[in-house]
Length: 325
Image (cartoon, rainbow, N blue to C red; front, top):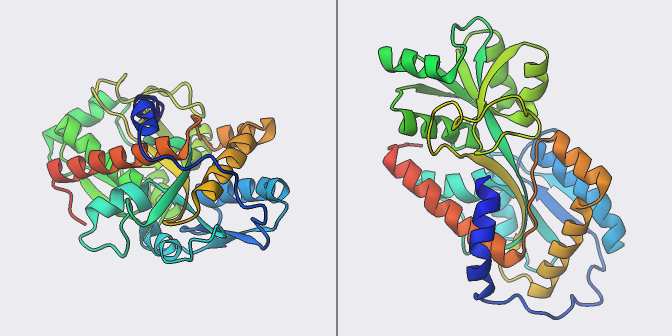
């Protein structure tokens, strides 16, 4: 998996960078409720994960941990609210690839600087997307789909949960690496997108395995391949796009904790340690696996280096694929 490889590769370089300090967090922190902003609607993967961790953090921090949903603009609205919050250790963001890697290089105007306005805390895990087709579609393999798309350029459309989402960019990466000309149809969320694939009103989509799994299991859609370099723990029988013949394809969405820039390093370090302990708990680990999340231990420095690499990666894909917002 690219996230694990990148973290390991960047570990040595990150260790040589600026240290977050070795001092303990202030003894008084936290002495009032802590807030986690989720920049998406309730019920999605980010929201479920935030509430799972918040419940455990209340015991670890001995303080109330609140989850607040501020949805809109592919995560940008909620992320911006945290970027502009006081860096006092009482406001954190459940950020994603959309808010911190894709939209910052896709949108011409952003209200925040993803690299400068946040203090990276911890990378919580990655989730693969999956290439789905409707059951009435003739495509039984990725090879057949590519051939059909090349035979009639632009005739085959793919759905995504919205412009700038990892699902959208999975499709753009597919176009770039295969030469297949597909038409992107953005929806206002995963639910309406996958419903139109189920109803065969649009032939295909890219969706997170978390959302797609029950529909694949019930036979309402057909899964052709996952987008990550390794098979998903949630769909072990579905091949990767690399296994299906698309060399170099490795796209995974990810979830992470951020604090506003300027948050005391000792607080950032303590939250990293507390969350790492929580993720190691058997019940939390099992729940994350049901969400399709794969976690690799990481420090704030390693996560910061990973974030810089992601911005570079997606900037290149947006440029090479001539992707427009």
